[in-house]
Amino acid sequence: MNRFLILVVLVASIAVATAENSCVDCHKSVSAFKPEEMRFNEIRKEHLERGVSCSLECHEDLLSKLAKSNYIQWSSSKHAISGVTCDRCHGGNPETRDKEKAHTGVLRASDPASSIYYMNIPSTCGVCHEKELAEFTLSEHYKKLENVELAPTCSTCHLPHGFKIPETTNMAEICQNCHNGNIGADPEVPPKAQELLKESFELKSLINKMKAEGKDGENIKKAEQILDTFPVTWHEFNIERLEAEIDAVKSLLGVEEEAKSVPGFELSIIIAAFATVMLLRRFTK
Image (cartoon, rainbow, N blue to C red; front, side, top):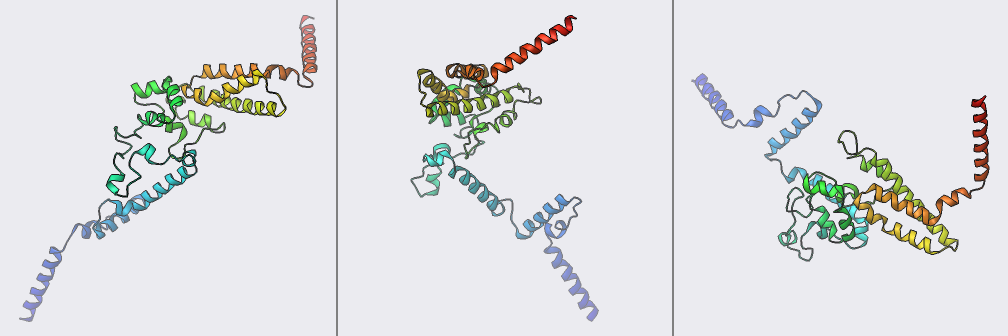
């Protein structure tokens, strides 16, 4: 009789264990073969044991860090200084505390109807930057963006949230993202663009120096006007036009003439001429 009771209890225990069996019991200890697989397997086991699926419960820390990073970038930008807040680009209503109403019109960047969808970014930026947009629409970049739907847009060069203006130290690097042998866009553009940007800054410094010395003639004013509009005309990305403008500024400032008046310039010309004569004599013997 005792043996029968023991058998009944044993069968009942097995039945209960079977009834309570779940995916976790079998799958939570599945072996992983790579370190990365092991790491994700541990995460998966925790998910299964806690009964949670992929949701904000796990990713809220990442989203929080991303939001903070965007905010920090924006807070140190010229947009922040000028009072240009999130809603100007993303949409929404910052004047209400109601969550749903505050996010009216805010769409994901992947949504073609979003103001920050990559093809819509020029028109979004153009609300404030009208002159830059007018120049950009003349560029090959814009034509390809419109027709091929694959080309640089404003945030490609200026970066979202930070809105950085490219400097001479990183201009070529930015251009090389597209202008390289792999993609096929002219790889000679990056160094040319960087040199033009560098020259524009140097000429601007030269003008400031000349004005500090009391020089403020008509040519200096014209040169300054060209350089003041240079950041706007840059958005057409017409290298030939930009080169012509830099040359015009150099001509107005007499940069070539100044180079000739550098001490020792005349002496270097005489030495070069003498060396040329000596070489000609040597080859004619």
